[in-house]
Length: 365
Ligand SMILES: [Zn+2]
Ligand SMILES: [Zn+2]
Image 1 (cartoon, rainbow, N blue to C red):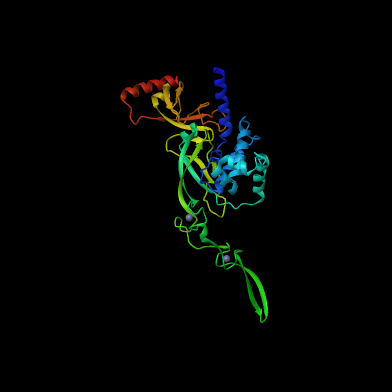
Image 2 (cartoon, rainbow, N blue to C red):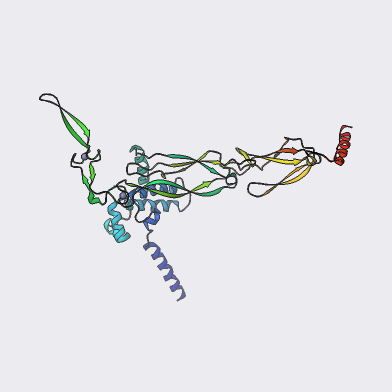
């Protein structure tokens, strides 16, 4: 009795898993209103990430196959419509019960192979300098920042027209974008030449009514939040690339946003050169002569003990191994160089004068 119940629950769970095929929008991590470009971009990103040649995770292959299937459906307007209305079952009926048409690996190589031949136009890549605190480069950090960029208008999806009915084939060129112009060179003699159609600017289409939302501009200004991952020990001027986050346009694939990351220069504070750190410590004349022990708070708050028993000359540099910056991509640190500055008193009391002269006698003898 108990067992049969347990078995039934188990069977139900298995059934549920089989029936609820993954939501293709979720698989590609896109919105239900995502346009062709978003879908393509996500496929590009995820299929690379989960390709079993690269990703050795045991679930990667399954994910990869799922991503290919999601792309196969969502990139095909007909299949996408069926899927939106009738779900996976509707698709199966449409595809005649064949579970998979495209080989996910062929699909991948076609996608990336085809991309190189087809010379897609790409929008400009913007490069900006980005300053972070040296502390962030020491410990590593995630920093949110905002960029202003042009995105395709979501009302007209980048056509610039109020509706699809407002896009007409140009009557000037019949949609070809060029006009054949006959010129008379001599009486009775004509030369034919092709010219870009002046009515549509070579596009072959004219817009009768412009989109109200973008005023026919096709794109809108948008402020977007992005996340910069500052890695431990990141070199100065390191370039972090945000692929495809540049300005959108119906005429091109968006370019990249590149941040060149540097640490802020702060006066009198820590200085960095590659994996070395530099610090200036000021000590009194008594400490310079008699030795001292001091605490220095490091970039992440841990305390480094500065200790000297011998006489410290002004400008002396003490090297503290392993207290520098993390070496990028490795697990050890560079060194810390502490330079000592000795403050001499402006006046000395008669007592100190006496003891100093005694000391100099003692030092000289
Ligand atoms: Zn618009
Ligand atoms: Zn035209």
